[in-house]
Length: 512
Image 1 (spheres, rainbow, N blue to C red):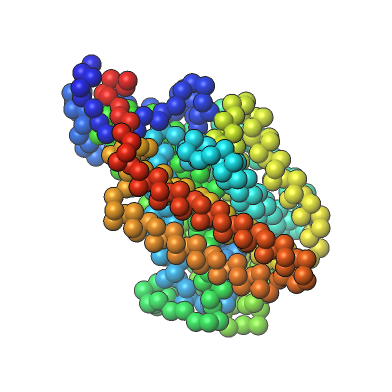
Image 2: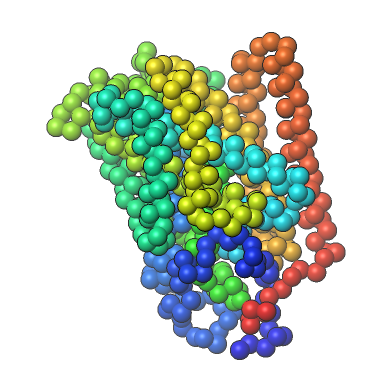
């Protein structure tokens, strides 16, 4: 047993048994004791172990699914059809920015033993944390509607139109119970199912890539040489806006707690951060390649054609079929299989995220089936309404999708700003707080993403807002929105400025 004098600058925020926790102790994957070199070495980082990397692999791939959801796929296909190969460089850098944000979310979860929604509840006044909760729920609902509709479209294609959109929504809603069933078999089994779904997407879209044979030289030029024109600015904004999903930031900070590590030892915490960085990077490299497949397939098939501006999730499969024909495996069904895997995996992770968001902000300790059912109902009820209203019109479905993108863009600051504030605070992170350089880079990326999405909002509302009453309502909402963002930024910087006035909490090797 180490003496009380041996301390590490780590936060003591591991919570009590009464607090809501992301995972119970018996649900976690055991890491302690695996490939340990010396029991006496408490501070150093153990040497790299392939076995440990395998045990830590999982949370990053679940996180990466938000980069592959139907909303992202629609952004990919529209970018390819309208901008050709010219925005591939932006897709690469947007993915890199998304990786930075997700690594910070993982850092917060590992270093504190708490996830983002829990810490928001504890660090902000009650009224502010409730506003953040409502905003997170709205973002999740918006993402979930897109994901469920994407799955429903795929089911409609695979059933040759026999099953209407609303029936696909009901089938997709059952994923809640599939999720609960899989959870009973442990975290690793659940992660294995997601790995299969990601592999299904990769094979489907790689097959399409092979069938359509996009230009290799144009692909490389598109990745390496930045190019942007006034005609493609909307697609460029969409590429960046789709990458950072507010609910995914909350999700990743909780997923990393599925591994049982020794928080009393600084070296073990740093080790976990190292492994999570590796597996998250690998996961997002794979997601980038899959997004690349989709973008280049539609760039090859529809760039410069009259159909380019009218392609969406609803008609993309049929356009591909008309362009490239049937064959042994019709490309329409290959597309639908990939889309179904994307929609199904993202709706299940949405259910997962909803549990963490609701449980963390409200400190609810409900049975998992009840919490999942409540979370699922938040999204399924409005999605059913959407499916019934928009089932007969692809144009109105595309308009709805634009509004849902706006809804999620509005929420981005309410995940990014609290995250950056918390990972910069020594009282919370201890020695794992981010340094000045990383802090500058992170705030620059956050500001860039917020400004890009702000541009999207201004452009959207300038074309959609008509009438005095609607204009007044939008103006009032915008004022309140900006004031709250300013409050979050001010609180973040002011509290960080008080770090020297408060003694950081510390944790000893004995865990006391």
